Length: 186
Image (cartoon, rainbow, N blue to C red; front, side):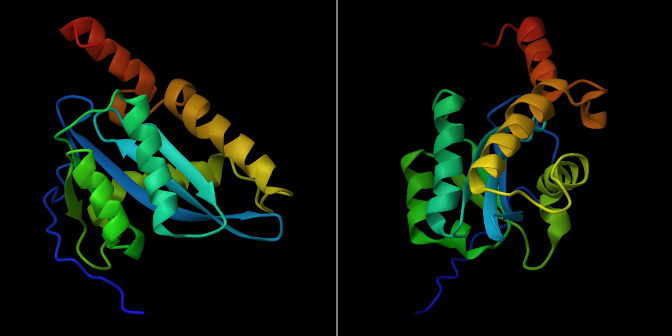
C-alpha cells in the first residue's frame, strides 16, 4: 500500500505563543508500555496555556487514534472553528481520514518539517513530563490501568495542579481561568 504524503506547509513555524485559547492546537503520538506490549497515546494540546484538551490511547497507532483525540478536544472545547492544528509528519496526521475530519471541523492544518522535533516542541515537553514525572518505569500491568492513570495525569494533574514555567508558575487551567476573568471570555 502506498502512503499518502500530502504537501502541508509548516504554517505555525515555531510561533508557539498565541493570544487566546482555541487558536492553535498541537498533536502528537508517543508510546506507552502496558500489558506486556506497546500502546499508543495521542494528545491534543492548546498552545495558549499548554492545556491538554484531548487524548486517546490504543493498541494501534492508526488514524483512528488521532481522530479520537481530536474529537475529544473538539467536543470539550465547544466545537471551535477556524483554528490551526499542528503536528509532525506522522502518517496518521497526513491520512485522508484525519484531514477530512479537520476539514469538517473547519480547521487548517500545519505540519512540522520532516525529522525536526523542535517544530512541535510543546508536545514533546508534555510527553517528557508525563514519562519522567508520572509513568512507572516498568510500564503498566494492564491497558485499563494505563488508561485510568494517564487520564488522571493529563486531565487533572497536568491541567489543574502542575505549575508550568510558561504560565509563570500557574497550571494551564488556572492560566485560562485568569484570562477569562480579565477579558470576560467564557
